[in-house]
Length: 154
Image 1 (cartoon, rainbow, N blue to C red):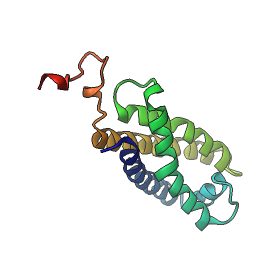
Image 2 (cartoon, rainbow, N blue to C red):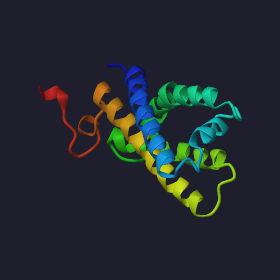
Image 3 (tube, helix red, strand yellow):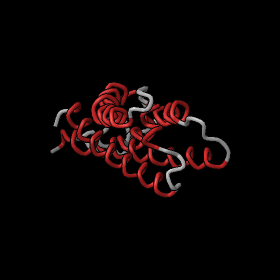
């Protein structure tokens, strides 16, 4: 399958994982964080939670995966697309925490930071895993790495 389509499918899967993780965070903190409001602030639509969530899903499904395809060869996390995806998600997490935290402070801010870090790494890992599987761009097939498979021998 071609790389952009593989990345979009990976992005859709990763966005589903991220959304579920964020919902679990919301439940576990008894809605003190207000993650849907955080998402709306993160995408810059203020209090319009529904529009913010739609933009969040579109970015996670289409925009970020296509950026990942463009940057993937330059990411320094080794040959595994899943690890490169997890590394790719780290700057997304930083932006999410900085732009979306609102007036959180104290212990809940630490909980917010740690749990959303986990959620974003899970997004990136899933994006990279699905992308690698569908595109055939796996660690075992990456030239230049010691354990790479040489498909020309078949």
